[in-house]
Length: 450
Image (cartoon, rainbow, N blue to C red; front, side, top):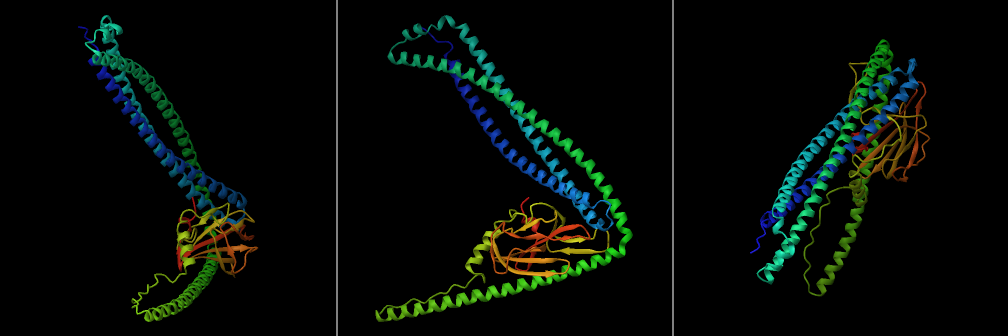
């Protein structure tokens, strides 16, 4: 009786090969998913780095314009301070990018090691099987194997076995080739990523050196300004008075708008209730004639004093957090939101309800979101100011000239409002931008994109 000696080994190896294929597919799939997530994170970091470097470029222009001009030293100091902070963010950003790359490299190493182990196992199985086939080659005449079957069913099983054996050989050969290709791809990818890491490290070292230069310039400018303490104190006192007038005016305008909006909504509801009461009275009268009892009405207490339109605008505006466009298309944040120590008057602290964005001369100002112009007014030192309402939210654009909108005008995001005013004595072109929810000042940096 013909006995296929290799049969048990071959079928077992076919199962093993398919298991290896499944492991490899899962491994590569997991690696692809991980690579996609890592790529997204790195892309985000790369975009942030480009944005920060663009801001450094803006500060460099301001520094170049104000170099060696005595009456612009404070503007120069603020610019160099902003540049130092931005450069520190760039360095941290690059550090995070390098860290993400190291994770990606380690993941690639793990994948390569696993693929190599699977390849070794597959080659070993393939070699063992070929040896077994060689040793039994005299017994493996396909026709003799089939014709020696004990019946039709046995012959059919033997044919299927030979098919499986052929399929197994082809599968193993393909697996070996594919794994070798996957290993080569992973190695190439890892080398490319490592190269990117080396390039980023070089950029990081350059930024560190530039940071040291910036700090030396800062010290030099600061030393010069400290000799003009009295003049700076007078300027700061005047600036503080201007900001207080602006804050008070904005507070009064917002309070008035809140009260007006509440009264309008109360009037709208009163009219709606009167209409509803009239309709209900008619219904009760009709039901009484028909002998039907009218159920008592349960009136819903309104949750907000805002109109339905304002509530919708409110929800839409809230969804724009960290997504609002900048009011200007160039510049950098010369002074951020909150309380700050004066750059030269160490005992003086100032509070900013918004942010100051230094930009180029004649820079256009555009609305960050659709809304309605509620006020246009002036404050000494703050020039022309626009207050725009967005439901419960308000945006403020100060230090403008050439206003292009009118009170009561409905505007859309990106609409031209005016141009940024330039203070010639200080060679300073700077917009002051604020965001409020009701009367509460919010940090615009948390709302503007990037």
